[in-house]
Length: 255
Image 1 (cartoon, helix red, strand yellow):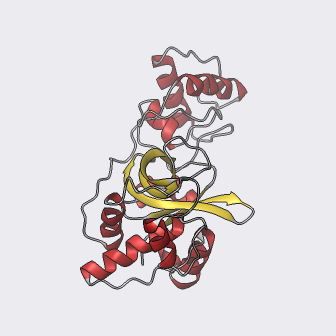
Image 2: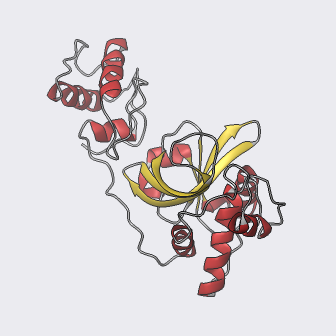
Image 3: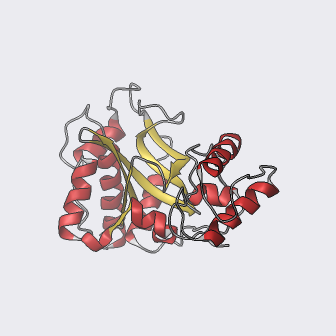
């Protein structure tokens, strides 16, 4: 069965979907005692157990929340949209290529938000050395791709993740895919898009989507690290992001 386009949780009205989930759980050794076709507290607890013991299709731990979103659906063996790879034509896709070419760049010294390359990224958006640079890196790569390809981009030249989101929302709202829209149709998230995380209190993080495997994302990010901590030190290719991440604000198609 194909993913239904919404998170399945307590109170789900489509009994066929619930029966499919129960059948997949039972096939994995998790027998349900809930009434047929009913998503109740017992089924939620069973799902939490399954999630705590399993990983998504990219090998990352599932969130044990007792609900069935894209990643848990795929882990249960349900169908999700096919993996997406980079064909390499749009400005966003070309910008990903620029970002990939810079994987391995590091701050000098580490943890300083400085270094020759980092200062070039910050300078491209008019931000002083020593500031966070994840959005500056994204903007720099888009500028480089536009310059080399002769394409025109109106992507905001800003060092602020949420500022970029708000400016695109004001000027090109059709270029935004919210988290809710992406969860309903994961195929909306394609290589070359810019993801935006909202970390609260006006803070954010960003990078490029390199590939989308049923909601599990391969990304290229500046001001990041390999371990998942908050101290970004360089440019990395990562596989720890997902459409359903709770802090995911959404995705920007590069205008």
